[in-house]
Image 1 (cartoon, rainbow, N blue to C red):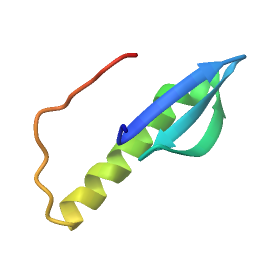
Image 2 (cartoon, one colour):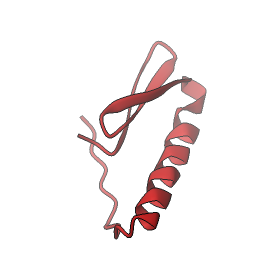
Image 3 (cartoon, rainbow, N blue to C red):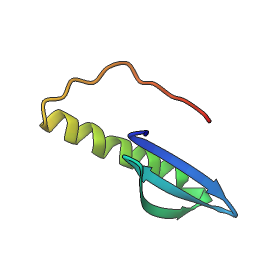
Image 4 (cartoon, one colour):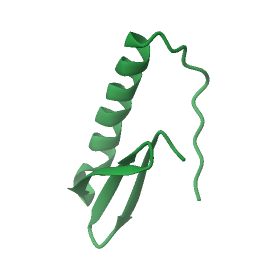
Length: 60
């Protein structure tokens, strides 16, 4: 289960956070939306005192 992910097709992308679809966006907004959601996750982790490690990216 990924903290953040996207599945895309037919000109749109579904954004996932913790395995749940949180929104569907047009293809042109996928990267912008992923960055926004990543920043929200990072801010929450900082508030919760969770140390972040090296970023890990996987493609499947």
